[in-house]
Length: 107
Image 1 (cartoon, helix red, strand yellow):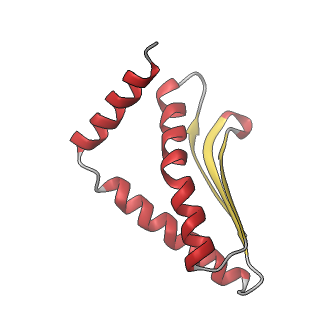
Image 2 (tube, rainbow, N blue to C red; image 1 turned 60 degrees about the vertical axis):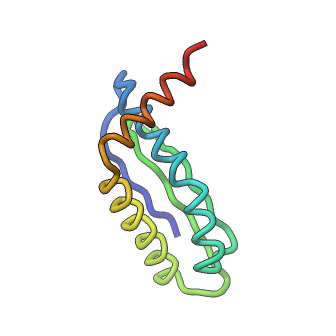
């Protein structure tokens, strides 16, 4: 089952590209863990997407133990919980993440 979303054009927008990378990094490991352990999916993957210069992400999962509909609902549930978590993040915490990233990029 493949679920994907696109949220805007890259077109030289470094902040949008960086945000896409940060969100993917934030969600990748928890996505794999939740769907492999909680939903018993045997193959799970996610990746950033830059198809046609459009930013987004792909989430893929398959299971020998459940239907495609159940797998799709598990992916959607994870994405809804993640959206709520990111939306509830205080601005101060988000700014700390940005600062840590800027500090890490200084050589």
